[in-house]
Figure 1 (spheres, rainbow, N blue to C red):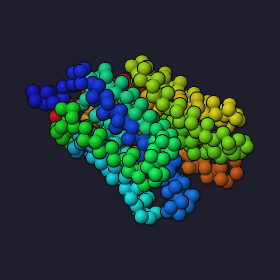
Figure 2 (figure 1 turned 180 degrees about the horizontal axis):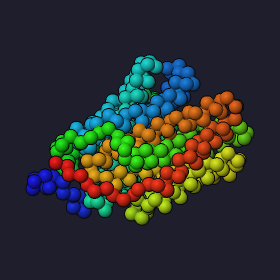
Figure 3 (figure 1 turned 90 degrees about the vertical axis):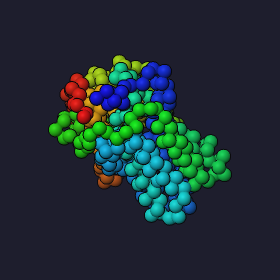
Figure 4 (figure 1 turned 90 degrees about the horizontal axis):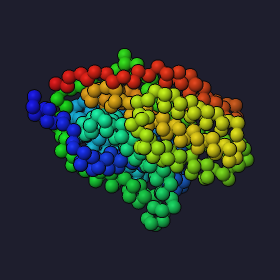
Length: 400
């Protein structure tokens, strides 16, 4: 019993900084491999003769894998523990992400993209499951904010640095660019074993399938779908909306402010983590403001359109962090990976399907605003769930 207690004793404060750096770097690789694809897509499509649909799949296929791969991540956590799962998932991600730079044809490109998406998907539940094993309970909210800051920074640097900075240094080679972005993750995976904790497998084999009897699984998941469908959906259709307004020349400015807003959102949550994480009121307010900002993009044009979209991105980024941070706060460490995986399964399924449905409706009507209205309708339907979230921590179950 004594040895088990020692194995779960949180690290002293002096060791929090290295842990924070590792969490942040792992968070960066939740998004960089996915969001380097859009800026590189024209070069990849030109060399491999990709259709428009396959070019789009470079981004949408990994997002779909974020939903599909959540359950393998949960299973792995229950068998080999969150640290081992995170390290293994990062290696899988590198194999797929770097492999895209070595592929000879379209089929292997899509296969590598799917493998990369699977690795990222398995990383997602492993990070929140790792927090209670590495951090004191009162540091868990900050830990969530740190790795989510890394993730949202990864969104920005992956999309923003690739073309203007990295490719010119690599002779404008999209293949070399993918390799340079991907391979450093192997160093991060190895460094995960530096903190002297959680080295062994779990004491017992915990359940890993989503607990659908737990209302948090569906409620948090559907609210994640609210945030994800509006962010990914508006990102996807922004060009169509500006083209309809006759202001397609503003697309680069719109995408810049839209994506950097999530970085600012993560910095705000880093400052306010202890007050906001676990607050139902903050979740309700940010969800409602996300809907309001998205609604503004249906009626506004030009810079007012960009301002409304940026507001939505900012508050949706805050909402995302608040929701992802809930599982390690509300359930035992043995249940955290399972709950996180279930919410990611639901959230990314809706984040993929709702914008897709909106796009089909917009194709039928010929009006891209109908895609946005579809996402707003979904969000309004699930908003009441935010009022019913039970944010009281459940009693820990014995882990041995």
